Image (cartoon, rainbow, N blue to C red; front, side, top):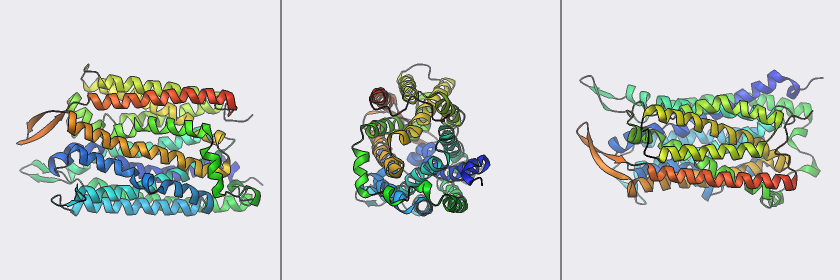
Length: 462
């Protein structure tokens, strides 16, 4: 009798369901990125406040090790419990973030931080715990249903679908805030900064319902396989001591370091990309999110393509090296004082989208070649924990640099003074992160030759 896992329509249907849940999380992750200018001008935030808020995504994951506990829970209690719990955390965090932006004043402080920024950051931190654990859970789901089959393509398509959330956030946050804003005499006088978050909250609730639907497929598959795909046999049961096997694996650390530096040159960049468009390329704030949205558009098409190439011809480590090199080139061109035109920024975003497709399409399918199945949830969680150091720290660093060293002047816009930033220094920081990622990808390629992980070999077994 053919099992669920052998039915292509069911496998790919499962991938779409869990990817949609992840997509809903990605919408909230970047929904405030196009609104940095608005937060500064209307809520009186500064770049440091924005950096504290943007970096909050990783606070609990890093300092309370929540993402590591999430990986342990995933390996001990399974996909269904972990996925539903993380989806609920995303909803709770989003609700707190909405309340903070919508209802709290900006006139008081908590621990020296604007109270609105503090509570918005708290909500984003709780959301970050749920989103990162969901990320691990969805990755393990794809491995469970596709290992030995089209795993890189499936992971690539999962990323592509999730990136639709980033596109929606970057393209529609400002139009929604403007549409629901306050008009006087036919002119917009105040944006509604909280309405985009409320829309995200609605999507997260829909994603939660979708994941509930997935649990029925997961339960049926476990019955068909007697839990074999969960590695539940006594001799294979995960033990806490097995964490040592992960952290003493050199290949694991090389992947983790590539991950933190590569993603730190992309996700924190996206938090500031719309502002970069305004200050360097003279794009109107209402349209500034459209150009950065090209990046996830590119990943939607290219990540599955590169994943298919990796499935069929291999060269995983080489793909990571080339993708990191492209990243360095793009950020250096953003830093140089040349061609300050919107069309040039658009071209650079297309190339950055290619780089952002190359590395993840090879990196995530390579992890199961380095880490055993029964330790996979913990392995992914540790990689995401390392990654969260960058997602937490670099938005803070960029916000500090902008406030301290990059304000060039004040400009009068609509009878108010706004800060004018020079983004050269931040872009050089992002370029340096790409250099580190490229060097460690080369080291990983050498380690693959020594340990025979099979990173340069195709994923599909003939």
